[in-house]
Length: 478
Ligand SMILES: Nc1ncnc2c1ncn2[C@@H]1O[C@H](COP(=O)(O)OP(=O)(O)OP(=O)(O)O)[C@@H](O)[C@H]1O
Ligand SMILES: [Mg+2]
Image (cartoon, rainbow, N blue to C red; front, side, top):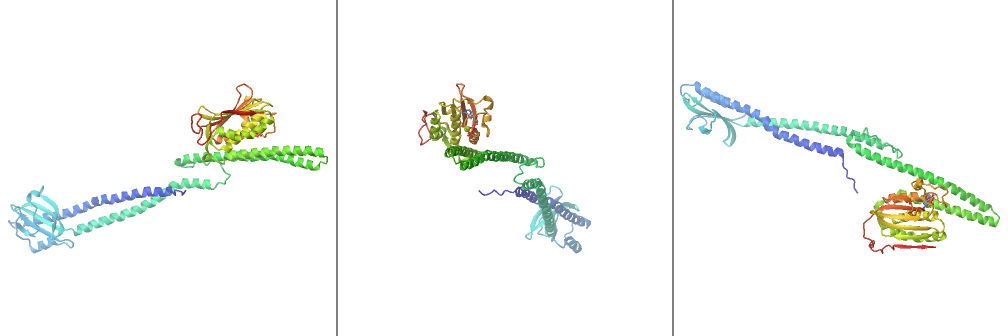
């Protein structure tokens, strides 16, 4: 699976930068007309002023409205090195009194006040017009002064380019600040990474939550939980290795000594006895080694719950039952089965290992000629496996202790190594189950029970697809 390659830095950068750029763009779009309007108003006032000057000029002349301005006045009025200037004086009927004939007046009703400013086209060129409605020597006239938009356009361009340069500079500053801010914001994460990265694989101390940023603290807490679990596992493995070494060293040394003893014996009878005792020691050592390996296998959960599939506990019993026939017969034990369907999700081999350890104990700790019964059933919505014997039972105060590794009750029969029930509990936990011991209903003997989550409810008598139903009652006795 490909990693997602998500970078917090990249995400923050994108999510901060694009909105900021959008804000800057909107600032230009909204700010430009706002910045332009004072400049536009200034040009309008100058144009109106010119119209007023023209009115005063006309008023100052004789007692009639002059039909034309003097050459100097005309030149002064039109003097502008950038724009073309037009002017016209009309009476209210629209008759030209002076100026440019093609600068037609607005209708008199257009005047809300005495002044009017508007845009129009002259000689195919846009112009701005300032119009005045005034009385000169008793005659109502409309005075208009118009100019092309070269100065205005130039002014607008300067304002716009000034704004764009300003915004670009602002953008550079914003990008630099955003990058700096993101870097600062991510510094605690970087420090955390360095702290964890600098550790050796044996250093499983919790990472300090105090220095982690508030948002990362839950993550650090989860990491610490994991480190705690890893440390517990590491310790248990170290304990296990130390115990295993201790448990194996003594019998192996014993085997070596017995082998040397066998070799040193000349008497055939002594030699035979020594060989038998060597065989017994070797068998015991093999048993210890097997139990240790079984525990290691169960503990490692080598299969893992992901690989589990539906297994009926009654099938698991059927699969291992044959192995226990001979040991039961040897001890004259009545070994019986009462099996009902009890589906669980699990690994049949590990479940078989679990069951074997329970039957092994029941046969070992039941008296000669005793009785051992294996049950499978569904009880209170859980799949249950029980092994009952009529042995001496386990005193109530050690019923939990018997599940500890290497625990053997004082004077326990046989030569077990105290790992069987630890293996049972480990496998049960791996399957999400729980184990407990109780005394038999009759008061004598032990019931070893393991409860598992039920895989799927199936009405009695309907077994897993393709397999026959569990046999119900059965068994054999010697
Ligand atoms: N059915 C039982 N009845 C009486 N005591 C039991 C029974 N099962 C277990 N015990 C006690 O619990 C102890 C631990 O059992 P466990 O199976 O873990 O170890 P073990 O049988 O001694 O060795 P092994 O590793 O060979 O199984 C036993 O030594 C025994 O004292
Ligand atoms: Mg045992």
